[in-house]
Amino acid sequence: MLDAVVVGAGPNGLTAAVELARRGFSVALFEARDTVGGGARTEELTLPGFRHDPCSAAHPLGINSPAFRALPLERYGLEWLHAELPMAHPFPDGSAAVLSRSVAETAASFGPRDAGAYRRLVEPFLPRWDTLARDFMSLPLTALPRDPVTLARFGLAGLPPSTWLVRRFRDEPAKTLFAGLVAHVMSPLNGLATGAIGLVFALAAHARGWPVARGGSQAISDALAAYLRDLGGSVHTDYEVKRLDDLPPARAYVFDTSPTALARIAGFGSHYARFRYGAAAFKVDYALDGPVPWTAPEARVAGTVQIGADSAEIGAALRAASREGRAPERPFLITVQPGVADPTRAPAGRQVFWAYGHVPNGWTGDLTDAIERQLERFAPGFRDRVLARAIAGPAELAARNANYVGGDIATGAATGLQLLLRPRLSLFPYSTPHPAVFICSSATPPGPGVHGMSGHNAAKAVWRRLREQG
Image 1: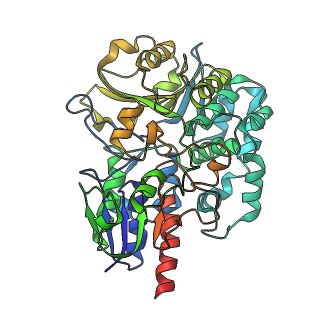
Image 2: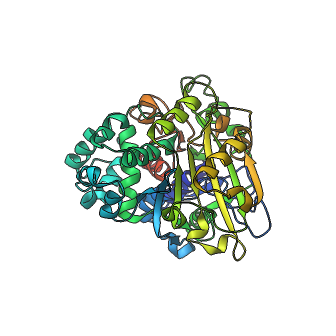
Image 3: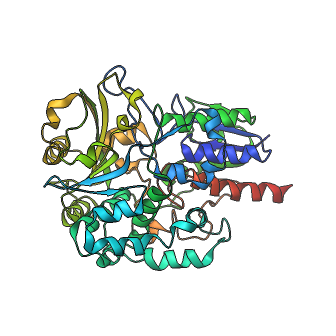
């Protein structure tokens, strides 16, 4: 009998399997698709030689992840590559605010009236960032805080809505860039703890940047899988699990799946009936015949570029998709241009480009034209650079990854208490009604992103149970 079986080979499932195998447990991992990866894959979606990331592309949480940093992933081929700027937020007049590795450079891009306020916001946390990240991403009850005072100070700043936090800024550049940071989790700007979301992304950039993985996000998943095999774990792909009986006997089962799928497979009935899925993504991957023609020079050297004219426009786009049940006329866009740091992604002189906006869960329309009209506002002539497109609305995203229910790439709405207490209101979020079954997907704390910490935290709960059994 195996010690543990893991279902789902996304970053969290892979991390959970690795953590258990590192501690001497026998582990087998099962994945429905023919390759590992989940939200960290790389495929030729458009033209031969153009290597796209179908979901996550830039990895501020990955390079800062306490779980990943404790693993020898570089030995298995993972290499982080950095653009000159982690992120830029251009404006219609050709100017831009930036998120730089340097706090001073970032603050200066906001203008003299907000530079000091920004420095006072982030500088107290940076010297203790590694400890703070570990404490913040390990909650709840998976580890005692190493620095409870700093964590409490962070909570005071971050638990209120981001709309409260940005009141310390007077001008639009700082407000808009911060609103864009919050929007990465597709949450309305006035939600609980949205200030913390923006702070985490900003601090992660200052600490270690927003890199891409050389060759594509698949390198993260492949490195985890290779390490797992070296530890003695087995990986089985093209193996769909429809019920627990489809799996070999084990002392524990760990699911990197949506709560909906887990309830169906394990027969949990309505246990997760109150779990809510949030707004969806509408994503377009582009093959371009050259760099994006951004008007703002800063955007040309940034790995990630946020698109939204001002904080009001960003807020309206989020409300439309999350609360009003309609696609925004001017969507807020998150875009990534991996070729700025990694020229191996496309043939010489060409570029891959990644962009998505927010739409209602399960939306069936086409946002492509609205996305490209937004891009043309900040990069006139963009459409002339397009060689090919790969379009993925909510239905296509859900078909590629069953965890993205209705196109929700966060595997659950990051709003209200569900942002902090997911998938249920419980102090033991990785446990389920069955004592031998656990959940480790992005539906559990600390939530969405390629960081492996949900898998790491769930693995702790599993190995504690296995050790209790002897």
